Image 1: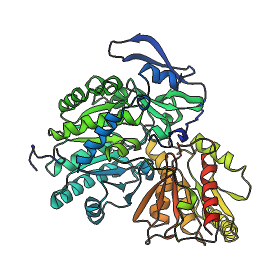
Image 2 (image 1 turned 180 degrees about the horizontal axis):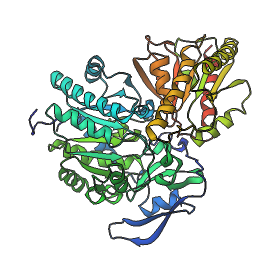
Image 3 (image 1 turned 180 degrees about the vertical axis):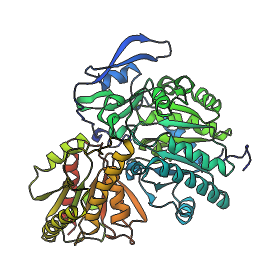
Image 4 (image 1 turned 90 degrees about the horizontal axis):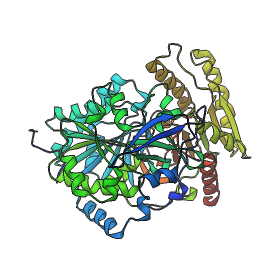
Length: 535
């Protein structure tokens, strides 16, 4: 494929149910402003230990929220543009939670040519390939993404399909960045393609993640917005970072190879004033894999950007995308859909046994959700101790204990919640790669429990990205799953295929960093109620 050849060519529903982030990170944190506002609306900023901004205050600084002034004319224009769009959107998901905003799509759990061809030829505009790279070391991640880039480019050339690549990452900025997009670019260009730039957009409304003035915020309790670099997520033992300003974050994560002054920014002012041509021209100026940060605090902001993006693509540009889940929905042209109820998920498969909830995530949000769930009567709670994670004999005895009790309870129709100890465990070396390897070993132990479960659960809920991926691929053996939608905002569901260990059951993939304190309780109650109504 020569240089000039392009790989591509020319809700308001349920938002009040948004999962409000409520982390406590060891002190009141936030951002203080030095008061200087430039003509274009950018603010000089200094991170400090303050009480943080109220959400409404931040939104007012950058203009009213788009959905309060969004006109039918622009909504129609967005759908008109999407109606002409024919590129396939291939989403590489670094854990199974990237389907938080979509419905009616398939997820493939391997990146073989058979799966890639099936996705490219499918009727759906969007399909997902689960890489689970957040549970891998960087070297393996790089190799995998380079290979996937080559395979998809080769298959698309063979089938005559044009496509766009989205590297779906964490909305709180964790993961193998920039390694994933850089290696993906290498794979594409190895097949003769040309990638002009990379669009970075971690906005995720359902989880309370917003970007304004190039600063990425996480919504805390009471509508308080805190810069991402001051949250517990930035202190992740494997993927930690310091910067909240995305331009600084790119420079930080690239080790200084990309300077903040070289990062292009698409501002809220440009989007709110519908400067489509100006934004498209800005994108046309990006080359040599330059970085583009997109500010957004509502879905309507994304729609304006995508209109401009498609104009630039039509004029010959090609971009990779490093984004959270909300961007996928808009780029894929997906309409809003109501949240799923428990009765929607069972179909013809109804086990008489109890359901199973597995909690592996250790973020504080998950711990508080578990505490709320424990107050519900009629469930059996079993702690799975991983204190002996380095001792095979001790761990095997612990697995047998948990399996015996869980099996007896589920056989009696009682739903079981298995959870690991709430203390975060780190490797003795303190190295990030070793911390990640330890997390994977613990996840594998939890996954083995599900794979050895003596009865078929009525439903399955997995809390945490690595946990849910390992359970889906290793314990259940899922090769291809259908995504009917979300059971709560930001909480997706797989319907497992016939090839899986528990075919046809609803499998809820619950991200560790999403949900109000009673969200896990809400999910379990929906599933329990649905099972009762359907029997």
